[in-house]
Image (cartoon, rainbow, N blue to C red; front, side):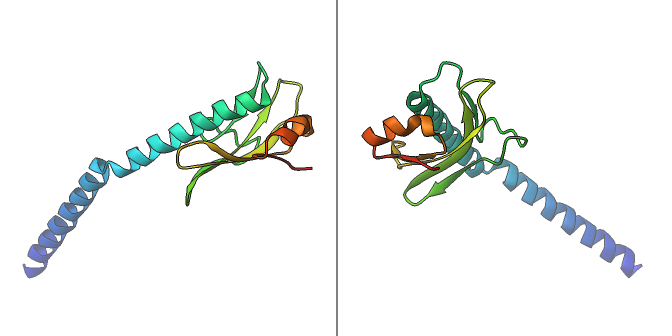
Length: 133
């Protein structure tokens, strides 16, 4: 008889603990706020990359539109600022080119590291642009 009561009390306690944990996890706003910040950072990085590459048919693979066949991508909060990696190509015939973009806390471009020889002329004028061979 004691074992039945013990099992019932234990089951009730575990069920209540799981319910409280699930409720707190679902109602926690921190992950949603962080996700919104990351989305904003990626949107800004897209517009900066589009401005620098200056292609009408630019295709971008980034954390908001990942493609595992092309490569891994990420957005990461760094002190101070953000880092966003991804790939881009100018059109269907172009190959995918990797990039790493560092943004300040105010979401301004700090550094853009790309593997694209076609941007060498811009790199001479823009100190934030770094061309990797």
